Length: 446
Image 1 (cartoon, rainbow, N blue to C red):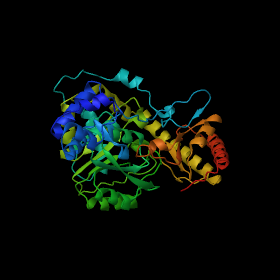
Image 2 (image 1 turned 60 degrees about the vertical axis):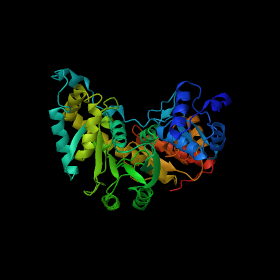
Image 3 (image 1 turned 135 degrees about the vertical axis):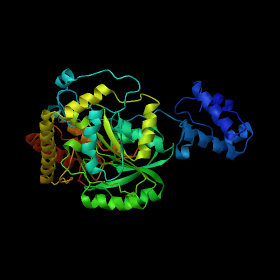
Image 4 (image 1 turned 30 degrees about the horizontal axis):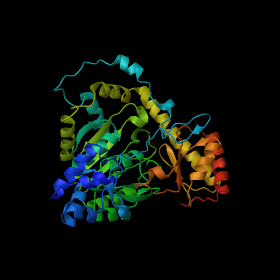
């Protein structure tokens, strides 16, 4: 920390000290990453008890102004550097890192836009288009065995963030899958939530580990019922029942199911939320099968949670664009879209399975029936050089580190996006991966 700035900190109470530090940050005299003085040192400097300074630092951490760094002390928070989907490839690299759907299976919205009978809504218009609400109810009600209300959000990530911030405060613990969806990691870090990682296997979250996370203080759980990104895991009926049994013991926990791949998943939906849950939400977004630019998600939630979401929307944009809603409805009810979705479902399942089979032939074991757009490969040692070598040979893939729930934690794994990976290419990539991994003495570690 700048010495002059350290000497400028003053105050006689924890609130005054914390407020003065925030003023110094706002004035640019303390910058992101600047270390705050040790508690004992600052207490002696300004003539207060050490506990007062410790309480001030806790207030700063709770407000997101500062962060604790273990033995390195407390520092002014940096803006998190977050990973996201859509990693681009340059030159002749085959991009197996993007996490994107195959554009060939995305409907063209231009015809639907030309045919929309659109009347510009005014303030006071119902938040949800009547026709879209009817479609959502017909498609959600069979999967939700409880009273619910429908709310719309600007995509699944927006829905998850609104749900968490409506129920939790900074510092609260959220149980998440490990490895975890990139956007969920970003949402948690930006909002100051702590993570409790819960391992997954081919059938999803491990029930005993989920129970441990909740008993250790997790107030919310985010889970993917099928096509988990990055591993491709989907809940079986048995596993979903085991998770419901865990949640039955903890009815206070907010349960968020992010069913992002619903329309093109090769796995059936098995509900993990029990009837005993007090606060819950099932999210189904459209970006994976209608296109990433269509930012709309259906949120079926218990009435109290729905009311909280509606109040947050009401204080801001009031509603999700009715033009977007009507376009989404037109695409969802178009027979041509139904045909594309059926093709996509079969192709995605075939392509992911093809790579899993090709890898298995080389002794590299993965989820044998991955669902979704990706295949996840665990190794017994770090993979950084393997990723670099594959790039040199023409294949761009993502290392596992960005999917770790904790900053700086290494994941000895790679994620391969299979959305556009056809059979022959899958065999070629599998051979190259096997060759390169042997060169580095790597073995798959499932």
